[in-house]
Amino acid sequence: MTAFLQYLGQSTRISFTKLGRASCFLLQILAGILSLLARPRLLLKQLYSVGVLSFLIITISGLFVGMVLSLQGYYTLSDFGAEESLGVMVAASLVRELGPVVSGLLFAGRAGSALTAEIGLMKATEQLSGMEMMAVDPIRRIITPRFVAGLISMPLLAALFSAVGVIGGQMVGCGLLGVDEGAFWSQMQSGIDFKDDIINGVIKSIVFGFVSSWIALFEGYDAIPTSEGVSRATTRTVVNSAFSILGLDFILTALMFGEH
Amino acid sequence: MDNRITPQNSLVSVRNLSFSRGTTKIFDNISLDFERGKITAIMGPSGTGKTTLLKLIGGQLYPDQGTISVDGENVHQLRRAELYNLRKRLGMLFQSGALLTDMNVYDNVAFPLREHTHLPESMIRTLVLMKLQAVGLRGARNLMPNELSGGMARRIALARAIALDPMMILYDEPFTGQDPISMGILVHLIKSLNTTLGLTSIIVSHDVHDTSAIADYIYVLSGGKIVGQGTPKEIQQSESEWVQQFMTGAADGPVHFHYPAKDYVDDLLSSGKRY
Ligand SMILES: Nc1ncnc2c1ncn2[C@@H]1O[C@H](COP(=O)(O)OP(=O)(O)O)[C@@H](O)[C@H]1O
Ligand SMILES: [Mg+2]
Image (tube, rainbow over all chains, first blue to last red; front, side, top):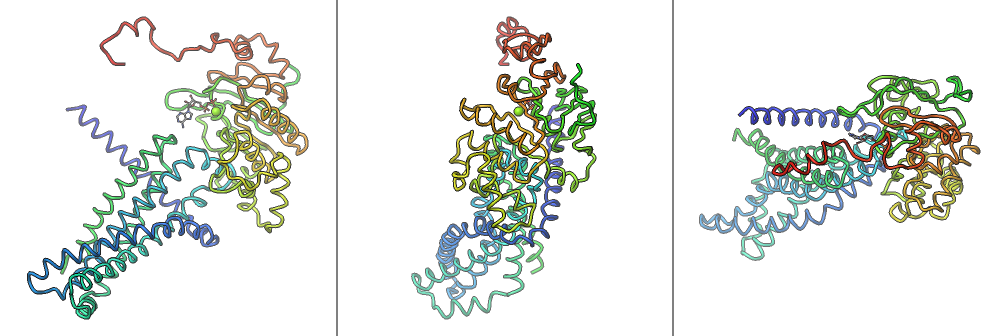
């Protein structure tokens, strides 16, 4: 029993010190943002590798998710003779939930894991301490551009996901299942609210981008500098990002849509 | 000894330094001096803390006790910006080279220039080619770090370390794992850079032969203490058992072959427990 309590106390303490280190790390990242403005090239390069390289996976996944949503929605809606509402159903699910959440999870798996592995290996091969000895702050030079790139990419990727998903839904709904195309789009237009749906979805995706970039970069920077340490850190990035995204999604949804 | 370094002409002086990792004392109240314009070697078995000492000098680690001053400045009392300014005047050659793997050789050597100066690209090109020429690798400028051999990577790292014309270079085990030819090249380079650029060099090594060939002064560390110091000649004639063991490479002596462990027979007979 005491052993258990001791274990509990110790792991709580370890988690809290880690949280503390992660917070300091975040402050250092944020402190570097101003100086990044002077060097937009660093950011562009990261926007490419964090954002642009995630296009394909986001597009394909968005397409399939939209198609499946349309199929599933059609069978339920047609029971009530409400096939025309397919458009609004697909779009609302994507914009409010699936767009930000699924693209957040994909982002953590595609870009987050790559960031952790990259930073962890840079640490293991002494590139980070090498930079420090050359009087270059590795957080400003390496971490901040990647963080900002994640922050910018994530909402764009989520928007891409939703847009492609709507197209996938339209293809299946109107092309395959014979829903009237005019009704599909007009119901969607009147049913989706800019502030309630779109803005809230964008806020979610910004939050997810912030959290998963922070986790990915911190895990890399804090990794034990060996092959095993980096591999564990990469796993932790994916697992912790997924938990954070899903947990935060619940909280944000409750706050945003709770009063309806 | 009459040729001891006087504190006035030492560029780096370490005073009463103590440093621990966890419960192990890595340095126990040691003092060392590194003279301007000379090559000073720090020798000792693996794990004595040679790399740690370089990191302390570079301000990446903080001592538990004692002071380290570089060119008259107390490294660990500098503010961040001042420390970074000091580091611009130091070059450090890491054991692995620590080249940035996402850029080619040219960009690696240009890196400190681009970060710290506002020189136009044409000027940077000239400087980079000069530095690469100095290490004999001007022809390798377009290679990526993964295409370099270990010896070449270290020479590129050396070119990068001298890019900002530092006053001092810290070399962490420059000879380890080198074939005799690259070793010869590196020994020659370190020596000639030191004289032509008027540098001060600190070499950490456990390679007795080659280090003695170029060092002006040697410190031998073991178990957190300085166990011997002097010119290479004095070290070779030293009567200290520690130094003798290290110089001749005897397996047992004051430095034990075995990591501390309980009695061997007891250990073998205590079956049942896994560890
Ligand atoms: N990051 C670290 N954390 C804990 N112990 C370390 C760390 N780095 C080095 N050590 C320990 O410090 C001692 C000295 O290491 P180091 O300076 O690398 O030795 P050397 O360069 O002389 O081979 C070793 O016993 C090593 O185990
Ligand atoms: Mg070492």
